[in-house]
Image (cartoon, rainbow, N blue to C red; front, top):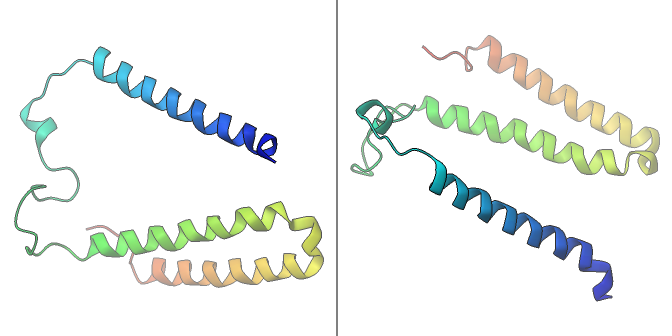
Length: 118
C-alpha cells in the first residue's frame, strides 16, 4: 500500500527541496539595493502597515471577487476534463451550459464597466 504512494511522496520531497534551494540561492545571490520607489506601496495605493480600519477603494474587492469567480471556473474544468470520456454527452452539455452562464455573466460585467479601472 505504501509503495503506491511513494511517487507522490517523492514528488513532494523533490518539490520542497527544489523550492528551498531556489529561495536560498535567490537570497544569497540576488543584489539587495533598496530605494524609495522599490519600497513604496504597490498597487493598493496605501502603506502596508497602517490602521486596519482605514477606507480604500471598493474596486480592489471587485477585482478579487471576479478573479475568484473565473479561477473557480478553471478549477471545475480540470476534474471534468479528467473524466470527460466517462461522462459522455451529458457531461459535455452540462459543462457547455456552465460555460455559457459564466460567459453571459462576464459579458454583463464587461458591459457594465466592472472591468474598467479609471
